[in-house]
Every structure is written in C-alpha cells, then in structure tokens.
Length: 93
Image (cartoon, rainbow, N blue to C red; front, side, top):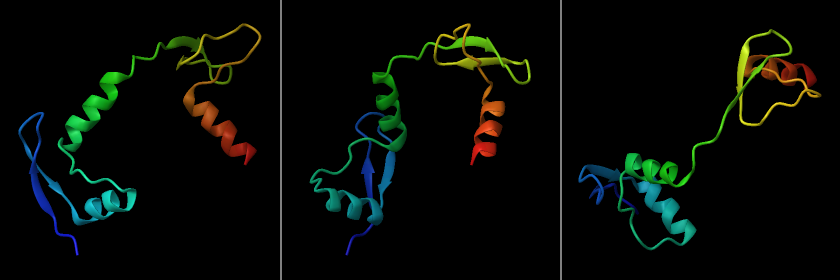
C-alpha cells in the first residue's frame, strides 16, 4: 500500500527516506502533511526549544562519589549517584 519516498529536508537540504511504516503511522494519527525535516533537524528543533537544565553537584550517600543531580540537594535528604540509585531500585523490585 505505502512505498518508501525520498524527501528533501527544508532545513539542511539533505535527502531522507519517508518509510512506508512512517507513512502508515502518519495516516493512523490523521496527519496529512509529509515531514519537511530530516530526523537530525527535527531533533535539533526539539532540543533548541528546551532550556538547559541546571545541574547540581552532590556527594553520593552510598559510595561517596560526586553525583550530578537536577535538583538542589538538601541537608536532610540523602543523594545517590545514578549507579547507586539504580542498584537500590533493583533491590526494591
């Protein structure tokens, strides 16, 4: 029913493939327009709209390494690095 189409990105001018599967997905969502930007340009536009997240440095309560977290650490709450936090979550499941 659908066939792959080669489109030109209006942002960078590169060719990209609008696959049959993507066309089917667009149709299922009711989209009538074909994409005008390649995946890389779409991703760039998405991230450009988001402000950079402020990160804070804290010391992991489990292993003592520095950890970067997206919230301001408080004295009354322990903070864990991503590795220790993942281990703790695995143990809880």
